[in-house]
Image (cartoon, rainbow, N blue to C red; front, side, top):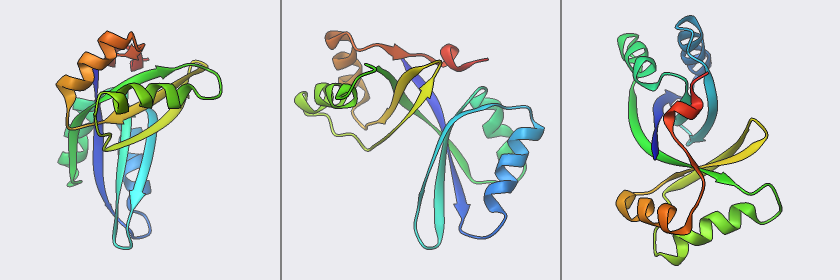
Length: 140
């Protein structure tokens, strides 16, 4: 039910992001979704990719600071308010969302959610019948 996401520490210096992207490209790892949260000194580049374990190994071997975490990928209804409905299910259960981002995959809205309450989130997904993606759904 959960998928793996890479979180990559990137200094705010020219060339650091392109270095990571080129390493992934040379390893033939397909990026599916990404987001960057930054401060003045550094950024956290979060990605969903085709082979997260291998990507992590490749990046670590190149000296890049990277971790793997598990997130939920919820399929949203393709209509105004679809994201609100999905988030509301977690909010009504008292689950705090650490962060989220969304993207399109095969014409469907996908919302990535990170929470520290994974077991409770899993229960909400099942009880509310929220459609979700697994890691195999991202492999191309």
